[in-house]
Image (cartoon, rainbow over all chains, first blue to last red):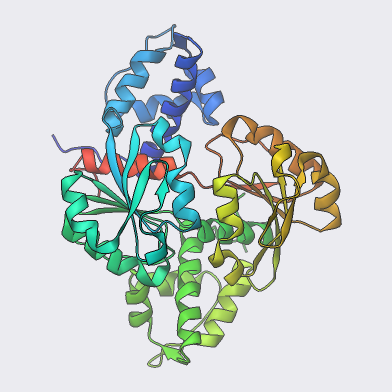
Length: 212
Length: 212
């Protein structure tokens, strides 16, 4: 059987479902209807059923979904049932904020190392993590078994930092620098670019006929 | 004539083209081929031509694009040829980093006010902007003609902050809180959610057959 191609947007929606299910679990709710879940997530029930159908059969007709069970399954699908070890490069304003970003640790992501190129930042401690120089990247990534490198340096340094991370053996990169990074095919990259989102917003404000 | 529906991803790509054109302009380059521009942006020449064709005819056959002219036109399309006035709500770690985020100001976005709910943060000055209490939002948004509200508060406060911003008259919201915000239809929202990107990355790392 040909594997079904799952659209990335469906994966993003699964993350959102998981987030709301976790809140429901915290509140001690055991069952939720697809209608109510859709309402919480800002979608519609048919979409939820379709997104979940890529991965199997979930939910009970006439009852809804068992919160704990569905959350467990979605986490497994997303790979969020394990702890991921992150290494940060660049502890400027944004990087420091990322180290302190509570939603990351809430969801099983743990920064275990931080690196910076500026001598005056080496040795600083942020959230219990001591900042190391760039030339420690190779050793630390391997020793601390870091799987994901997070890049929060200036755009002109982003590619060389990515190269170091790839050489050290990370398999994924989350890039916050507004720069196009090239990596070998076996490394996954996701980009977070605030300015693009702001540009998009301004385009929509400038062009009222655009899809709001 | 029916207006052509322009895919949001094309708009994101225009932003990326503009970013690289601005770099070329700084370097004093006058002309660029679609091939080289595509190379810089990590795309392909046909895509660039297609994206630009939504908005008119640009470039000269056998020559390429005039850097300054194309940059001017794309900025006009994106609404980036004007200064946008931003108000930030939430000056925690992330919010403070946003106020100091150089790429914003480089591109015509200016924070002109900042608000927070915590008494000990009121009066603080960050990048020359004095932090005001939440109940100043209405007055300040109007007085300072703020068009875009940037939300960097905890998820459980995001909706009430959005309501205040909408009542005060912003037309766009850039939301960094990992929460689903409901707004009236005349207000545009863009969400920046780091955790979703990280979830997506981990899904791709967990599922090697997924589209890398």
